[in-house]
Image (cartoon, rainbow, N blue to C red):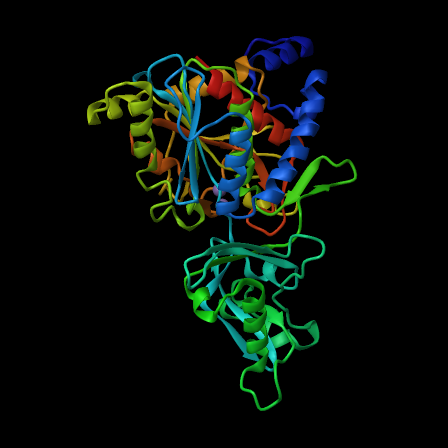
Length: 473
Ligand code: MN
Ligand code: MN
């Protein structure tokens, strides 16, 4: 029999021994409140300027230049440099007082998001309507992309080699595009009685481009021709230019406050621009650090980190090589290995928040909740932790202390029940280089949808947590 104790004693003991998460709104310091709301305003502006990976690189570089970052610099501590890789990846560094061989503080996020890409031969006409074919990118629920305003962003090379950057559908005076959906009256057999995963076919995600003919009735494909003529008149494009273009169809809406209390932000691409933005804001607010700080913004996470702009490419190694040169430290493959071994990193990525309507797919003791701060995810993957990078106890202990010392409100965040599903991040590719890394990010509702949701309180704690991590001794 355990010793009998009073209710008061039991409560005191519970307070001393039990682990409790905290709601940010309950514990927020009055002096932090303004920063929390201001940060969300700046975040919405960032989201609106950065809807694609290329636009994210441009917007991050713009903010960096404004803050005194240069593409070349002297080795003085406090100096700030950045490098752009193929217009889709950005790496930045703030030189610290210590040598690189003492190890880095690194945060890596991704700036690509699920979307519809145009096919190489996109333009055609069907029943006297001009259309464009798409191929979806990343994990989407296809039905979410129907019957909503869409914008067209991307990069086109003209025959003469001139590069055009397009963004149509973002300004109020712009036209938008859309994938038409079938009326419910006729949808019974082809959609409603099917499994949700099969109800909308990928080949039916076609964008409506126009309905005006060009020339008399006898002209073949005159609706398609009308679109080609518009593209030529406006941009001097011919159809073959579309073959080499990268055109991305994204939701046309701007980021908005959600809720009567305006406590949430709804937008396309919180995954993973919430992390890109928070890590950037953190680094810009720090004085000259002890450690050398590196931030990486990767492309192609949503398709498994494939290709030379992904976390699997040798971007960190290449960037580090130039940092060694910059700091006047001798570079060797052994030195690089040593530096990476002493490096502490965060794989900054959003977490799937507990959904009020689908609580059954989560395991509530371990699911991240909106408003409970930055989510620390020891491992990702699926099944028996397949495909995951599982952070070590030593490292989790260190990072937990860093957060606690700086009063960061944080929680743990496992993605769903065991065997319910799963997901990956870039952590495992960086872990393979030998550094310590853990997944960490803002909880998000409606993840991978055209209108994702996050709490402003969690965004603020992500920023605060990243700042504490970068500044930690
Ligand atoms: Mn992500
Ligand atoms: Mn994702």
